[in-house]
Length: 262
Image 1 (cartoon, rainbow, N blue to C red):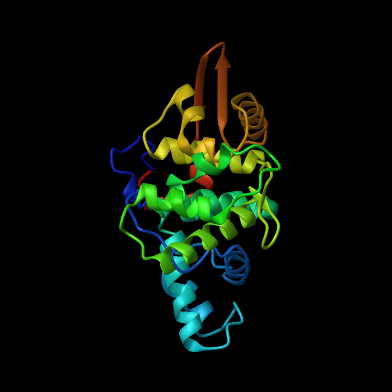
Image 2 (cartoon, rainbow, N blue to C red):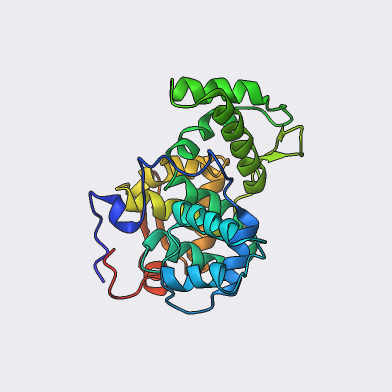
């Protein structure tokens, strides 16, 4: 296994310029959790995930067309193939701590949905207790992508983004969305740091990557959680003053088949 970095993150399953799925769906956290529980093969292919959804109806969808749409959107968001590095590592970390799935799913989806990755700075800047106004969010989306969305699509997209933020733990409430703080764990911190690594960051810059910023937590808290992750054997962290080294060999060897180069 080659653990040297690449200048092409897309070989690991990231799709940094993808339009994503939020015009029609959220990150579909309940469906992802059910699917991961239903497919137990240690190295499952997309065909096995597809069969679980389409043939076994593990997600309990009422119609074939709904199953097909769900499969398409889950594949856009997550890849659904254990040869896809970012999905395979999500799956490995989820098995270690299923309660971390909301942030793991958000982080993974953000690597494959451009709009989802662009908007966190806007919502994370809101103080706790702030009511998130959907019309204000629509204006932010339109500012990022002028003339891309029709008024109807803009409304549905903002609703889906708000629902995703709620599933991930950044907002609470049903019709009235209120800003809350996310609760990262050593597991989600490991994933965020690793995504930064796959995109070319090293050392202290890992703690300044956009994926770490999505954890909604101060750098020192992230560092403390990374130290816990190091004691758990998920990564190896060395810190001397402002100099930081992070080694991901342990989680990569646990998660990634030898035939995948990382």
